[in-house]
Each structure stands twice: as C-alpha cells, then as structure tokens.
Length: 205
Image (cartoon, rainbow, N blue to C red):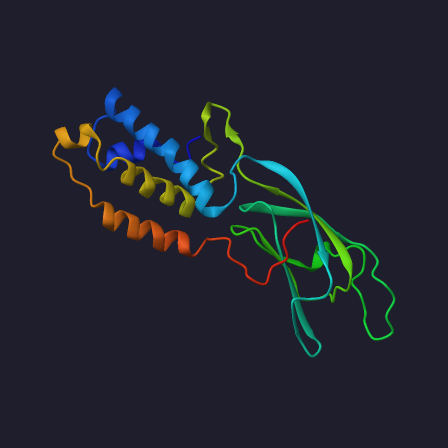
C-alpha cells in the first residue's frame, strides 16, 4: 500500500511518468511501507482497537503528583473512543481512579502513547478503545487515502523510496545519482522523533 504519491518522486527526479520509472518507483514505495511499519512498530490500515492494561500503581510518583503511561498496540491514533477503569481495592490511604477516565487521557497520536496525570491507579485494569490508521483510497485500492496520511509520514515514505531507487537501472541510464548516506541520515532524523519509545509505559495484556 502506498503512503505517498509516486508521481511526486517521479517529478522530483525529473522523469516523465514512463512505465519503467513508474513501476520502479511504485515497487520501491511499496517496500517503504513495510520498512516504516517495522520501524514505527505499527500497521497503517484503519481500524478500531481495544487494549487492556493492568496497573499495580503509577510508574511515576512524586508526592501528590503521578503519571501513568499506556503504550497502545497501534500508533497513528486518531482518537480515543473510551477509557474505562475497573474499581480498585479499597485503601484508606489511596484514592483509585473512577470508572470512566476518558476525559483524563492525554494522547500522543503519532506514537500511540496515552497518558493520565490526573488519576492515581492502584491494582486496576484499564481498557482503552481507539481508532487508528488510514482508510484505503476508494479510487486506488493499492494506496491509503493520502489526505489522511500526515505530511511527516509521506515524507518518510518518499525518502525511503529514494533510497530504494539508488541502484535502479533506470536512474543509472539517466545518469542520476542519489546519495544513499544522506537520504538515510535524513530519514533517521525524521523517524527518531516519531519512534514509539516510552520506557515507563505499561504494555497491553
């Protein structure tokens, strides 16, 4: 599935949309999707998902302040539909979170990290339902709906596509040379800000 428009790459390289360069670019962009899915540790197809977490107690506590992070099983989250907590055991010294905590969840949608800095969880199960990913383009079943794909991800797909074209015979015949080292450096810098790294986050059951 395409995360960007191959025509943008073809135009950038100075080619007309001829069959050989179009095929090479499309294949490289298909490979880019698989690479980015692996690097970002998520798939891209739209869906509604439910993750369940168990919180013994907040991972971060400092006096009255606390924070609990949840690493959702998918990134690129558009919205959280609901976040429900079970009733915690009664403790005279500990106030557990209410059942419906949806309004208290802070979301980093790109990374798929949900955070609650309002409630103090104690031996509770939290179920989070959310929507993530991108719908297929109704006019092109081999592409995601590109208006829904964020610019940074489209740019990452284009950079990885260019990397995949470095040794393409079509570019060699046209005497076009791409600097794979520079392209990979740009891609790494772009993805480093979007990796789903959250060492204090709780993982789904």
